[in-house]
Picture (cartoon, rainbow, N blue to C red):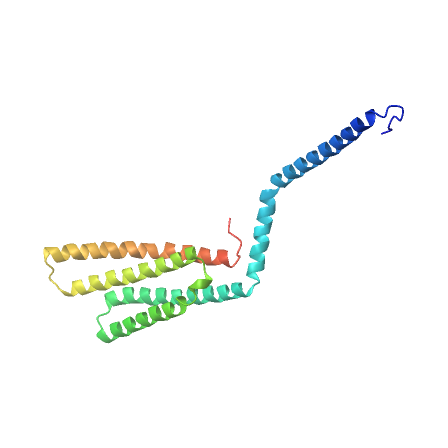
Length: 201
């Protein structure tokens, strides 16, 4: 912009005009940058989250988490298998020694699980801990309901009160039995999600 030398009084006005023009341009640029930033903030946040997850998965902590999940799952399945054998075979088997051996194996499986799980659960989230402990709690309740019902059956003939108690225990056992598979399936999904498996559509 040419400054008219023949009118010195207009010089300050031109200076202010230039300054305001620069300020206006700067404010516009700032507002436009904020608009772009807000528009893509969700995408940026998602990409940052994915990057953090990838970094975590390659960290030492994630290796510990992998080992913990593998060990928990292996010991859980051991408990489930022995529990299924116990509740199925014990109902049809009257051999005292066989029953004692199954109970011994079941107690060992529960103890082995908790000995591994308790000091390592720090490597899994609280939501995963909750699912794991709910499955184990349900399994223990299932075992108790079965054993109580089985002991009650030995006291034949049952009184009306005994028959009513037997019916309640059988109903409770059946309900708990129906919960086991969904709980185990939900925990499997949780484990695979932590390990980074893609979700099935």
